[in-house]
Image 1 (cartoon, rainbow, N blue to C red):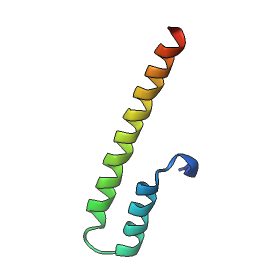
Image 2 (cartoon, rainbow, N blue to C red; image 1 turned 180 degrees about the horizontal axis):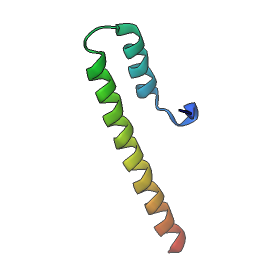
Image 3 (cartoon, rainbow, N blue to C red; image 1 turned 90 degrees about the horizontal axis):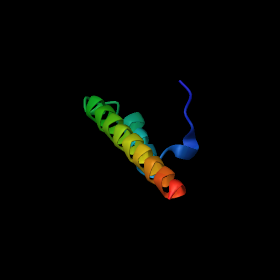
Image 4 (tube, rainbow, N blue to C red; image 1 turned 60 degrees about the horizontal axis):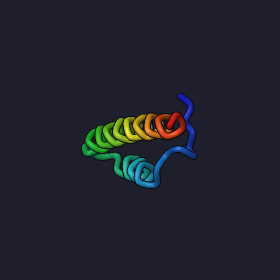
Length: 58
């Protein structure tokens, strides 16, 4: 899987660092939190692109 680090937020990087450092049972919870945040960021990005497209048309 390829990752574009320029599009990764600082919070996501910190969370990944926590996952790498933990190695404990809470790793699954941290991964789930990261996935949720990634989905939220993706939806926000799509929303912004829609808004920008509407602005360009106006």
